[in-house]
Image 1 (cartoon, helix red, strand yellow):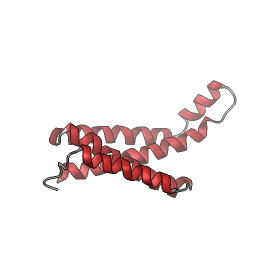
Image 2: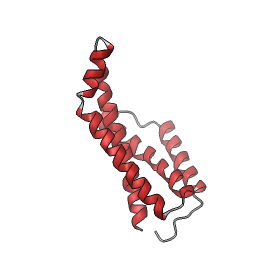
Image 3: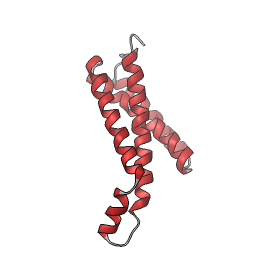
Length: 121
């Protein structure tokens, strides 16, 4: 059960990391390339996103120790679910039927590809 909890946490962390990097992209506004890079390097969101991605990667390595790779990788697609809701909550993006259908298909595909290897959950 614990590896699945970490898998869940890993997907949430990946989505939150992406949100921080999207926020960091706001600092890319600037004149010269040097100024743009400097503004990006000063962005706290860049470091928060990077650290969260690093921690999610470490969790991924840990989870792979206990679960099949052919299960972990497809189930990591749940990151798209959290990303869709975070984009709505943080950036005000619209949840269209097309987006929700796409995410539903990704989740369904992940469940099918993982082969229902959720015994012990």
